[in-house]
Length: 120
Image (cartoon, rainbow, N blue to C red; front, side, top):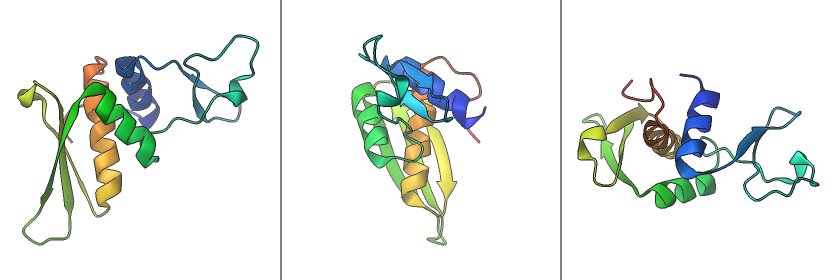
């Protein structure tokens, strides 16, 4: 599943009207009036923006658990929708913030019905 597909599925789960602007950026057009230009809508990319990721996690009640490997190098993040403990998605890597954002988006995408948003 591509990052774009993950973002679209996560936005769907959160009820966000997500549109791709002519410049290629993803914009949150929720509540944007028809007479406004899409470029007036704020950027939305919880894969790169901590605030977008946190709002997504809070809005969908996604649980987050941080774990470390024995070597202490990799940051591991488990994320799953509240009340669905069987839906854990783990992301591992060297950047704890990036892993957390990706785990949140993958959990949200799974809520949005995306296939392929599961484990790596």
